[in-house]
Amino acid sequence: MTTTRQPTTAMRIAAAAGGAYRGVFAESRLAPLLSRPQPVRRTGFDLDLSILDRREEAEDVVSLVLGDVDGRPLPSWVPGAHVDVFLPSGRQRQYSLCGDPADRRAYRVAVRRIPGGEGGSAEVHGLRVGDPVRVRGPRNAFSLVDAGSYLFVAGGIGITPILPMVRETERRGRPWRLVYRGRSRASMPFLRELAHYGPAAVDVRTDDVTGRPDLATILPLAEPGAAVYLCGPPALTDGAWRMLRDIDPAASLHTERFSPLPVVGGRPFRIRLARSGVTVDVAGEETALAAVRRALPGVAYSCRQGFCGTCKTRVLDGRVEHRDRTLTARERQDAMLLCVSRASGSLVLDL
Image (cartoon, rainbow, N blue to C red):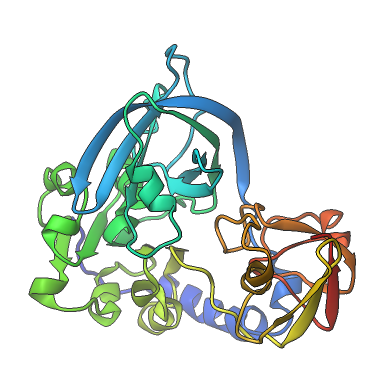
């Protein structure tokens, strides 16, 4: 549904200005001070819902439709939103909403079973119609920005937040294109829902036919200045920003990952767990959460990317190097998010 066109003079000027800004500010040590991360917008509240429908969408992928048993309308949401799902075991996991935002009667999520994972996905697959489920939200850390055109790139279950974005972009009448990657067609959910847009708009590529994903052949499909959305495993998203900057400096990149953020520039430090009487060493390449969970496996967590707040922990002593996206300045005085934040020396935590 898109056409190829050359950047205009205005676009070239904007791209040059953007490059200069990145060189002076965005890529300098001043960046964290000059541009704070966009906080997660929080709406809704805790809801006690029931599973209204359950479907096998693809190999190892199940979708659940959640709603109020009395039919009361649910809090509104926009594409890119997710909900926190509290499973019967007490685990808390986050899943993107992949239904229709106009349907206030239900939320739909889809979950791939992860072999050898930590049990959350297997527990979801064990749920049945009629089971009660508590959710919190919806919240949005992956908003659909207003742009002249869009390129969406989804890897496997990464289609879940992208699917409502495609619908909304089509409704707005904006040019868009989706490249949908997967191991095989049998492993890819919602192909039938996407089929009516046609192959010119939805480009399905599978590892068993076209080989492993190659962003170098995908990102040039974006129109100049487009908003590019990537959602999938690290193999799909890592390196995308540098590559897109070289291809089209006027484009904007928006990503969502399924795995923890890699530790960048981390230095070893030590944590003393005050209530447990245990001291743990945190290696330079690991998170405080991983180190603490070696001693206390029951420590709660969810996103492992610094925005949900599940692993928020009280700090009794020490100086924290905050790397999260959600704590306020007041909260940072005596708390940290274990999944991303670190320390320059040693910490004492209320654990």
